[in-house]
Length: 368
Image (cartoon, rainbow, N blue to C red):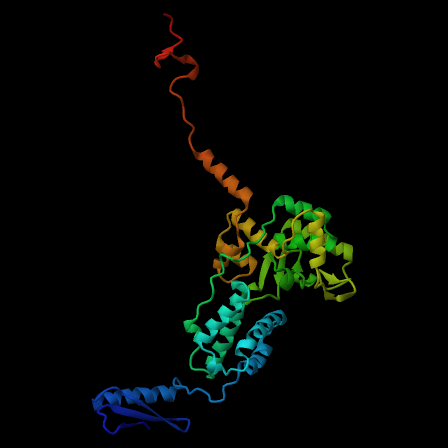
């Protein structure tokens, strides 16, 4: 039950309620008792419905909270990535309690990392992990409010590495010299847009339906990544040839570890780099073939929404990052534009005119 009272020497009413055995007081900021009673009743309702929550007094340190937070990340590679960011932040926040991590301290961390030569994109990855940790801490009432309401991430688009969009000529050169498993993997990504490590390399033969020409992605980075991907005729031909080469019963995985067929392949960077070297193409990440897939879809006139669905993103906004227009399609667009322009038609045949010295045209078809 709440109470109203006045402090000595004050004309404004004070409100008091009991929450979890603790007496809390606050000013009603009014001298009108009727209004104060209504404010007190509203406050009592908030307390009763649980909307007024006390901050816990035993908030952990950043390091202790990180040790609780990381095991809750289900995907091992994501957990490994988050652990890397946590290690970057420990020197600055490790011994601080969560309530001591302020917006000013976060800004100092940003400046410290940038001064050390770390790129804005990398700093943002660390900040994103910290933001998620503090959001959960706020939900668990270890802190009253996340300081990220006053913190902005760094602008990174201008410094972001631009993806390499493979041309059709580069594609043919790579496939001509690549090891068999790299050839199949490259075709699979170019024709389906699968993520190289999290979707393509873990793919099983049971996830491919050659009758309905679909690939079922069962494991992905996000929930939107769980999807059915249409299987192109070219990709289907490559996969069937690869399965016949391995043997149908060799491994449940499309890309098996040859020393242990019960596990999938994990290390392909050296083989990919060797294929690029033999094709005389400067090195670029295998992941960029996914960018190439998205770019080719966009160049073919597929809407951003469907491109996003094909590559396993929940929002089409990411397509601007993935779907960079291909130069040859840009040139083709200009040619199409020029073809629409009507050609000028001469009113009189040019061969029937000549110019006199005084600049007046004379009709040569007339006789003097």
